[in-house]
Image 1 (cartoon, rainbow, N blue to C red):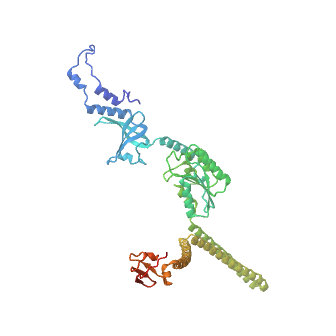
Image 2 (image 1 turned 135 degrees about the vertical axis):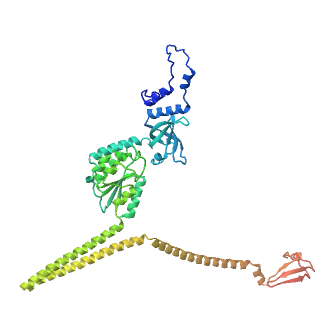
Length: 484
């Protein structure tokens, strides 16, 4: 409805006409006749009256509207109410969303978010502000997507595509698990981690595909058909990590949903987070809230596998016991008949048969015990091989070897340096002046300590010092014979 042209028959329009319309003088034939002051006073509205009438026009003229735009100037005061501006490229409007309504909005909006609002137009009379009072909010674009989702879900549900009788049971002990998802996403890493922790005996085959965008549905269908044709997986996981409704929309494709429902291999759908639902979730044999949860659904625990092995071995022992007991009963019955008829010789084959059964039972029990012991020993060896203590022992042994080698190298270097030191000492002794003095030579110096190497350096009567191997002598020169 056009706000500038309200319905003239609406109650608000009639009230506005009565309040704001000009009262004409009864003398309508004279357009120039002056109105009395009393008549003018009756036509004047107060500001409160004007705002009230304008509010009624807005509320009655546009009682419920949907509008889409971008959030700006978002304020969240302590009262819990939200106040913000909704704008587009050309205009804006003030909005308010009260606490009892906005607590239902998850996630909370942020500045700049594009949203779709539902509410009613009103006017805050105290300030004359025109605003939209919001009663619901959702991300822009999701409203149409959710309508399309619900319509397609209802259609497929009415066709029986989601019926429980179409669902297949998941294998209890899968040997191969197929995963249809993006090779670069976190979902495939989570699935590999969970399977490695719970059930390493299973092989994991990835059928890579994109999981978002226009081409994603066709690529996912192609990966699913490839998994069906190769028939190498006992169970399939299809899905991806979390995201918005647009991000997950590939898994709401009708053709893909029908392919999932018709898949001959049991399939688990794990699209998004726990609160996200897709049509593939409804069509799959089982829905998991996350890819990690899907991996837990299709894999047994190692403890459960050992418990199953113990159960089977116990059943085998009990079955052998029952067979032996039945054979024993048959033998007792036959012996009773033989005793009655005295066919003593015919008793011997049954006795031999009994011994054979006892031997077979004994061998079977021993073989079973050996098999169980061998399996337990292999598991213990694998556990010890992965034990941190074993790794520490290996490191300690390597460290001890390195220390021993270091000591040997240090000793060899010490001996080598000692030999070298002895050789250098011997060479030093050869040129040492002390060795010369020990052979009877002496060093003469004058009073200044300068060595005397020429007789001309000392005159008769000079006092000189003579250095010997042991001690020194102070001498007086009696005669000097310099060489000519």
